[in-house]
Length: 274
Image (tube, rainbow, N blue to C red; front, side):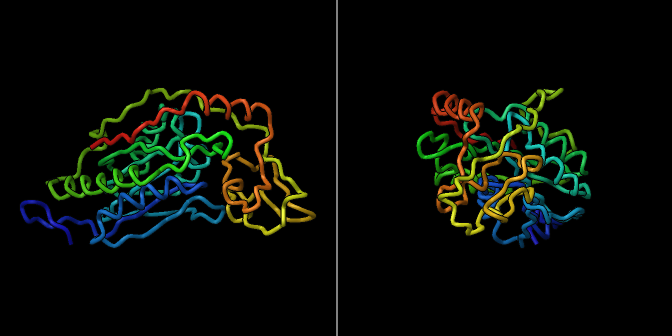
């Protein structure tokens, strides 16, 4: 059991890694944060896929590290839905958002509010850059991030969080962690009426894309089919396909890709809030 600086036992018996991470960037970041706390048992709770738990209770003696992606300056809508399964017990939480090198805008403050509503006490927060879900070989956007430097920052952040935990005499108040963002939040982007294009002539029907989809929108019957009503255009299927048989073809999204490639090339760095 870890102890505070005056020798008083701290009641952190487990770390809960809680993520919604279709392209796995958010999960990589929170895994790196937790790696600095290797002496504390760790449990992974992945809320990404359709079989995610409907209820997840986290005890007061557990540290929750919550990681989600940013969609259009807000927490990804499906992540908000899946995080409704969380129920804390006035225990500490670390909140982390990953974004594609444009801006996280109001996502971090929104995630803080989600954590508080779920009965957590936010202890620290981070913003990290992940390869944009629209990024590709011809139009890279924050390609290969989080990279080694990002993950090293995440590990250092984990050490800083552990030091803060060790120094605490009491858990902080729910509103003690100040993070950037606006209330009311910016308007959320609406659902896009598109799906990735399937190149049936290239597709080998290997099925790798099916379990990668966070909504179960993809089926394999007379070729790969994608349900537009379920698709959130997270591009996990594109990242997973070994044959590049899935492509971004909708013109409005192709224009957005071009804009991001041209205007979001300058490297941004993680932001840490303790």
